[in-house]
Image (cartoon, rainbow, N blue to C red; front, side, top):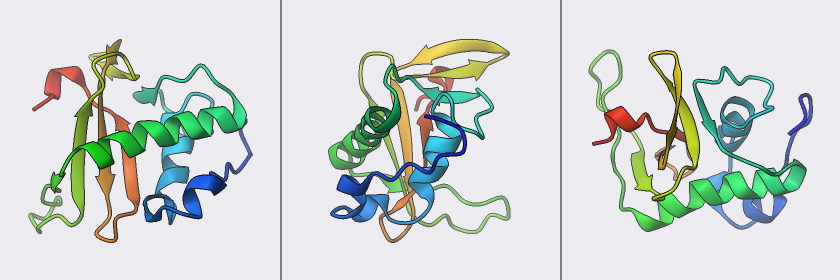
Length: 132
């Protein structure tokens, strides 16, 4: 993905409420290599460029949501009940990497957090040492 571009997963957003709102763009900007906001602490692995990278990332989000029931999201920092759902899915092969104690660790587990309306809030590879 090129910095400064605004990917538009049109084939998904037109037919799937999962991709409505800003959540998917957040994932592309923060959790895909080459995204302008990446810090490197949790990145999806992608060996693709452009629209293929967008499609591949969309698949890494869609599979956990469609394959798991999801759990209520955790309380916020003030102890208020969380809204939306958390979907955790193990692909059984590396799908991303996470910085753990300054070391890059590959992980097969992806966490997708949805808003109450079913749209993506965020999605990222999960620290393998914190897998429930």
